[in-house]
Length: 231
Image (cartoon, rainbow, N blue to C red; front, side, top):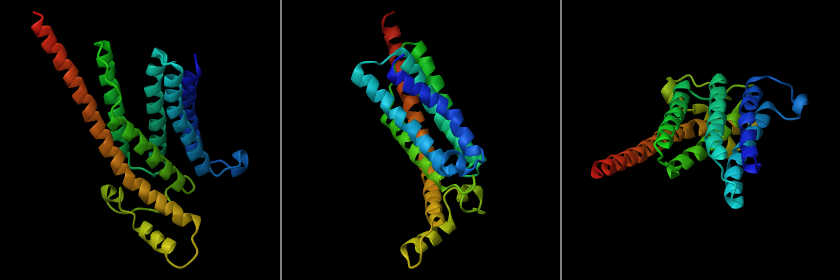
């Protein structure tokens, strides 16, 4: 056990705690923070540990098999817990979350098969971008919540409502026009941006999954060709 692995374990334990914070109604007197601020603070703290554990492990030469095993598990637990809580709070559509979480299961299974064959499939740039877009999107949507729900009610067709938030336009006009700006205006803007960026999360998830499967195919083909040439 070293510091990078300890940070990874902290991220694993934060995942269920994040669900409790996002789905349990509590008084601000309990923690001294509004629920949405407590939730986004906890999530961002966990996301920072994801950056720190890898950086510290490489800098100190403490890269271990345990860390390599636990790090992706911790990431997937954290992201899955956050997205499922957003669906419960009506802040994200279930079909988009199913695609994102399904991608995580598919890639995990693929990398497990590759590891069993002795093939190394490193994290791709598309995968890293996907993780960054997820952190930004989840943070915006958590911050936009009002009493555990969205700041606006989108009554359009679900797929259209995925990106169409008419109230956000009114908030932008109010924000950049005359009049006082209140916190609800900002929440509507955060909500609209978060729902829009969710498209980017879905697309980057599918693209990074394709990239992992492409790498797996290349390794499998090379192995097959090597086995054929040795006969």
